[in-house]
Length: 364
Image (cartoon, rainbow, N blue to C red; front, side):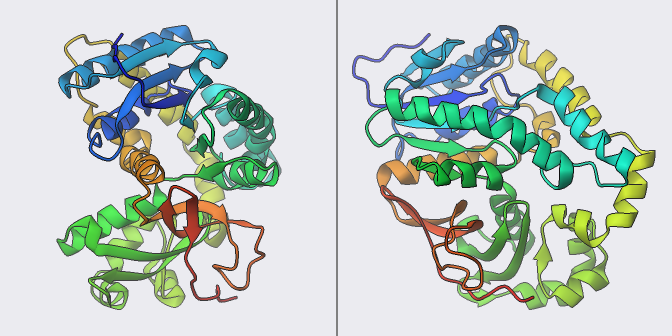
């Protein structure tokens, strides 16, 4: 437990027993200049996981010299009370429900996946009511103008439900920032110099341009290193060349349905893999000497999550007006999609929220 004499920004994390939480903690601990978090409330309904993850969070914050208050709680009202930002990363039904989402569709000749197709829709049906209830409670108990940040999948559908219900919410995914960081490393430049024309829906998006210092380097990448792009997206080079854009990995469920379906019928599910990774991570988290996020966490699929979430919250708080990739109402940004649709695209972030930037229409 940490104490602070004066209370400022309070951040509540719902689903804090997630193995992703150390990512978030690292992000907040390294952004005190833009986001002075005085209270971090970690909420979870699983007390054992919360104790394990919360203890690691405490050690990480101590190492960073953080002087705020860390609260571990199973009480929703306590966590949300006075919160300026509520970050939701829950999974209704846990990995067991995910396993059903990935296996039941296979019996009917459909792709089994947790964010797209019938599995994704089943997850949305389980998740949306819970998230809406949390958002309603945040509106009642949170600080005036509290932001509700959703990282819970399927992010696009959940964010659509939140905004349609009138909540002060933004959806977040790490796919966009993941592309930015990987491309920055490939071209040997700082990530801040890379600006993407990232367009589409959550998990169903394309990179149509890679601007580095204002110059589009995508044609060069597709000409010289298309094999690398094919490996990263798990799609054939000829398909990527025909698209003239880098597709999100998740689009291979649509472009290569038959091949993916055959693979899923003969291999372990991602849910089973994640269960093994989570068991190993939680054992590592129990080590009282561990005070940094372990490298194994990268295999959990949360790469750059800390940067995406902390950067978004910091910009909403500081009003810096920087450009980030988020899930927001289209509002004309993509001309040939409805204004009310939640899209995943570039937006300028300030204290009033995320404002999508105009881009070219999506080709048929």
